[in-house]
Length: 487
Image 1 (cartoon, rainbow, N blue to C red):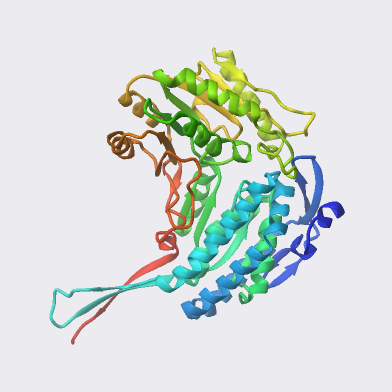
Image 2 (cartoon, one colour; image 1 turned 120 degrees about the horizontal axis):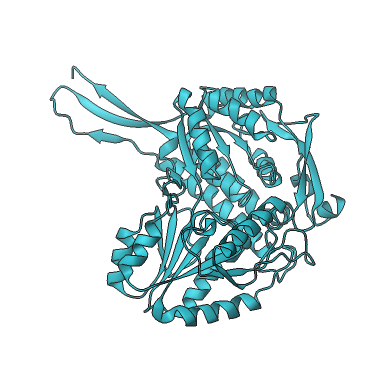
């Protein structure tokens, strides 16, 4: 751990305690955080007891009384101070991300700026939570609509964007006047703790932000069963999302879920192939394919299939697979052995049923324990797991298609509905695919698109609700009708 701390300008950013009611609280039970690039322990952090999770909810509930009554301007000011501190500590925060999840340094720096952008956006949105005036159908009555914060909100964040997913969930809650209890992924708690440290420095009152860590089942049971927790936001697998909905049902919480995906990437015959290859690499291979919006199913129109495959092969051959701390790294480590083994099982299943590995398909143990080659699979079909499951690794599966209606039907033939990508320069094709593809987002001619100004979320088994944008505060607010009569 000492070598990890030596890379930071401010070692106080690395915390290993729970953050409850403005205090850093130790627990006798610990769990280890590993650098996936090396398999080495970088920190031992406190594991919350059930009583400590209850303490966090109590703290957030108590703080809600004053925080919800604070002016929107003051909440906005504190959030802007938090944003400033995040940006001032970009390099250190990025190195923490690199160390705990293995992300490339450039990718981690981008994530820190992305995380700060949500704080900035929702700091501004704090002053734009408007109500409404409804024209009255009666002469002696007036109808008003006001929006009020829900209360305590729980946020359960994933390992793949440990900083950005924390701020994307926490910032809209804070700006509306809610308080939060955050449970980061066990594999990546350090980024959330560092952000909580900076939030404390920014001046958030005690109890507004709380962080608990450790055994997911114990923490989730408390957060889902406590009726003071009015909202639960989760990013992760569809299976866990369904379980959280079920556990939250008895208390009728609002639930926002950003779940799995099985995105298609459709390249039509009129597309600019070099740009399309660039967009695919950008969308798929950042963070070794460990993103919910990474395309898995690559549909290529017959006439351009061979050319696209050749260009993609050349591009992947030139990509550098290396630890994220290496400045030249383009494809980093996967998060752990379980993730690598899942990829191997998907490839083994596909090949046993007739698929072919055109490129890659193997581990790279000489680089580190969890590195995997960028991989291309051909001749797959829907009988194979790899066609139906979220891959979550640096593997693409290529399919041919002839007619546009055919590829739309194939793209929609999944339980997931997060995002689909299309490469075309034909405006009529643009409109047809935008309307007919069944997903919360349809992206044309680009690879990375998420930002705080645009809504993010899926349909079908990919989730409920939207994060970011002007819609991002909706699920944190109660809409209340006020009727005044006898006027």
